[in-house]
Amino acid sequence: MRLFAAVLPPPEAVDELAVAVQRLHAVPGHDSLRWTGHSGWHYTLAFLGEVDDGLLPAVEERFGRAAARQDPFPLRVHGGGHFGNRALWAGAAGGLDAMRMLADRAHAAARRAGVPMEEHRAYKAHLTIARSRTGFHTDLRPYADALAGFESTAWTVRELALVRSNPPTPGVPGAQPRYEALRVWGLGG
Image (tube, rainbow, N blue to C red; front, side, top):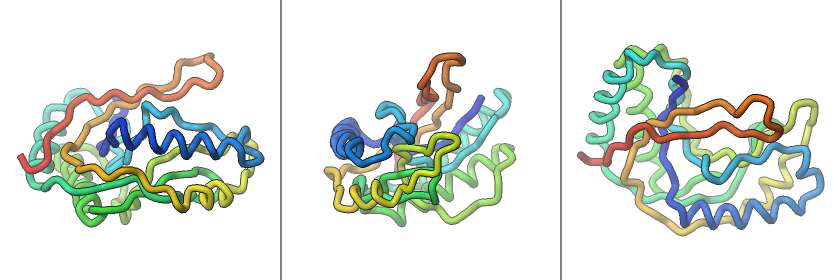
């Protein structure tokens, strides 16, 4: 199964971001982007990729320990940016040092559980809201600029989630991956 560790924003923050994203549809060229579904919005902490079912108990045990070592922290969806012309994202503000620490702990937990992890990179908190469609080279700067002043209501991150990514339904135009939280752990034990 395809797994990742994540922070899931609360419904209020998702709703506020959805209003800001809807306004982006007024920017010329918006139809050259594949917009992600609101129900799947998340901040990925560590991408585990395909994980053998036999490793799941060890992953869960290690993630439980990682969550217990991390205190809850404040966060809010803040601003936006882009990775080249590939992906448009909303950023985060607040307890970014704590979020980086949680990302580091999730990555280490997966590795210690036996998941072959890619080389660990510096963590950049982002929530992907759109990707360029194949064959299009959309300039994402106007979209990121339009998000620059966005600020959601703050919340306290109290959970680490292990999420399963289910592929889009084959043959269904516009189908998106479906995300399912397999397990969540409270931060701080």
